[in-house]
Length: 363
Image 1 (spheres, rainbow, N blue to C red):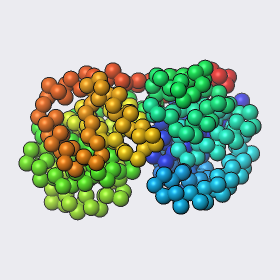
Image 2: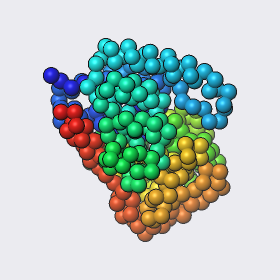
Image 3: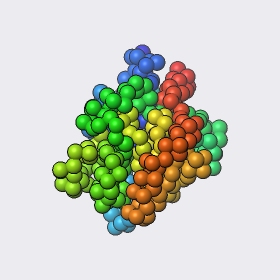
């Protein structure tokens, strides 16, 4: 009898890509396993999960809005509605186990599964746990964490340190730099910068880059720029006559983007940190300042303290980011030191560790 899994979560690539990596790793070990993803209607998982070859059901749920309290008025009604929707999904699919990876849809799905006595597994990607995961952990079967020191958030007996599951296309990439640069139509003998503000973009990073395009060109730096959808048209217009810049709202081939880059500028979401550790890239982090409990700064500081990365505060990005970047681009010894230090944080088989533990428990 094949095992059936529901995987819940999404909202950003940082939740979606680990979810898909976990499903792929389980499928490698249980090739008759059946999967159903549950995500939030209108969020990017509704597009990205089917692209990865998995079925997904959407529920009407939203997260707690920290910047506009008035928008939280309808939240209890949405949560109630989502529980009815989840009940219908469970009635039809009848899962053997449920995995939550973070994002709006995780809470109602895992809460319902726990009320029915179904095994539930949580993956916490960040070094500062989310509120939903903390609430769900008490009744969870196992909590997978990216790092040590998470017993202040979760029951110690439930914790399994797995690392963050990274897309296999990145972990197993064998793309050489020339092929990667050809993919973007860029030159081989020019320093290459990759700017990634997370899957939804980053305003402060985008504005700093836009204001300093001339300076990058003057320093002979070519650019692969993931802007996110909101900034894409602005960036496209600003670079329409600049052959040294390749603008994307979302980069599908991140394996090529990483292979092409000499230096990376990035938000410090947990998945970005994990991917950059695996691909061994010198990076300047600009943490997203409104992340819950400022966890992106905590993520970045772990690497900064080990001379594995540099960090510029979001509010200082406009004046400090590009000078710091140009200095790093011109310092190959520092780049090499950062590469050797960041790779110490890499856990390339995290997806396999999670899958093996889940299968062992439910078999």
